[in-house]
Image 1: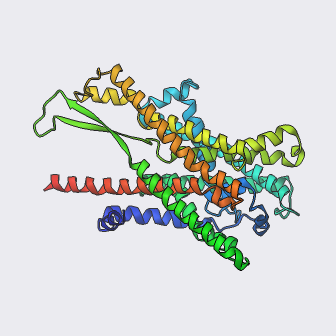
Image 2 (image 1 turned 90 degrees about the vertical axis):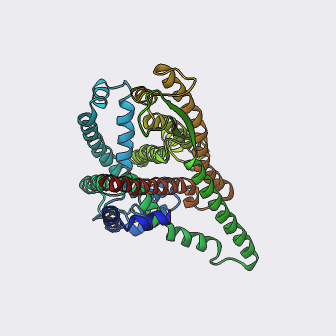
Image 3 (image 1 turned 30 degrees about the vertical axis):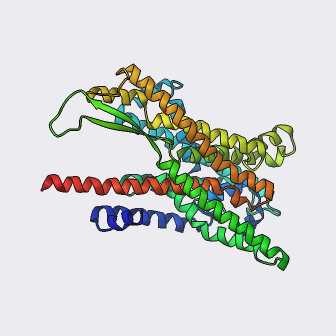
Amino acid sequence: MLKIVKDAFKVKDIRNKIFFTLLILLAFRIGAHVTVPGVDAKKLASLADNSLFTMLNTVSGSSMENFSLFALGVSPYITSSIVIQLLQMDIVPKFVEWSKQGEVGRKKLNQATRYLTLFLAFVQSIGITVGFNTYVSAGFVKNPNLVTYISVGIILTAGTMLLTWMGEQITEKGIGNGVSMVIFAGIISRLPSGIKQVYETYFVRIDQADLWKSILVVLVLIIAILVIVTVVTYVQQAERKIPIQYTKRVAGAPQSSYLPLKVNAAGVIPVIFASSLISTPSAILQIFSNAHGTEGWYVILSKIFNYSTLLGGSIYAILIVAFTFFYAFVQVNPEKVAENLQKQGSYIPSVRPGKGTEDYISSLLLRLSTVGSIFLGLIAILPIIAQNVWDLPKSIGLGGTSLLIVIGVALETAKQLEGLMMKRQYTGFIKK
C-alpha cells in the first residue's frame, strides 16, 4: 500500500487529487475544534461513560467532545441515505421512477436526501443538546431556553450540511468516498487520545502488584488488534471468481475470463449505516429524557438503542447483518449483471443466460453475503461483549467498529489509487 501511495505522488493529476482530499480533511479537523457559541464544552467530560456520546464522539473525531460545528458529523446524511434507498424498493413509486432515470433521477434522489438530512440534523441536534444538558450537572448550555436550543440546532445543522458538501467534493475531485473519508479521518484523529486513555487506565497510579496484570491486558489488546486487522484485511480482499466464456470471438480478446464476487461485496458501508441508524433514534430520545426518563417506554427504547447493553448490542449486530445483505445486492445487481453478460455475448458455463444467470448470481451472492455479514457482525460485537465482561473503557467497545471502518476505507482508497494509475498507464500506451 505504501508503494502505491509513493507511486501515486509521482503522477501530477493523482497528486493533486490527494492534496485536495488532505486539504478538505484539514478543514474538517479545524472545524472539529470550533466550539458552538453559548456552551461550555469542558463540562461534557462527565459524559465519558455515555454510550451515545462515545459513539458520536468516535465517528465525529472528537467533534462531540468539543461540541463543535461538526459535532453531529455525517450521521444524519448517512441515515437519510439509508431511508431514501429503502424507499426506492417499491415503497414510494416516485423514488422508484427516479431510480430508473439515470443521471437525472440520481440528482433528484440526491436532492431528496439533502432535504431529509436537513430535517434529521435539526431534530438530532436539538435532541442531543437538550438531552446532554440534562445529564450534565448544572448543564453545559450557558443560557438554556428555546431560543438558545434553536440557535445551537441551526448551527449544528449548518455544520452537518457543510461537512456533507465537503464529503461530496472529495468524492468528485479527490480520492475515495467522501463520507467514508471524513469518518476515517475522525477515527484516526482519536488514535493518540485512545492510546493515552489506555495508558492512564492501566499504568498511571496503580500498585506494583497490578503492573504485570496491566501489561498482560495491554499485550492481549495489541495481539487482538493485530489479529483483527489481519483477518479483516483477508476477508475484505477475498473473492469468488466465476468463470466466464465468450461466444463472440474478437481479435486479441480472451476466450474466457472470470467475474469476481467479493465475500463482503458491501464493504464497510453496513457498519457505518448501522452505527448511524442506532445513534439517530438515541439522539432524538434525549429530547424526552427530562420529562419521561423514568417511564417504561423510554427505558425500553433506551436499552434498544444503546449498543453497550446486551439487547442494544444484539440489535446493532443484526442491523449490520441486514445492511450487508441489502447493500451487497445494491452494489452487485444480479439483474443488470446478467443483462450485461448477455449483451457482451458471454455466459457462465452450465448456467442458462438471462433469468438463469440472474438466479445463479443471486444465490451465490446470498451465500457469500451470509459469510460476510456474520463476519462483520462478530468483529463489531465482540469488543462490546469484552467491554461489558471485563469492564473495559467505552472506547474499546467501539474498537471493532472503528477498525472495520479504518481498514475498509484504507483498502478501498488504495484500490482506487491503483485503478487511477493503471488507467493512466493504458491511456499513455494508446497515445503512443
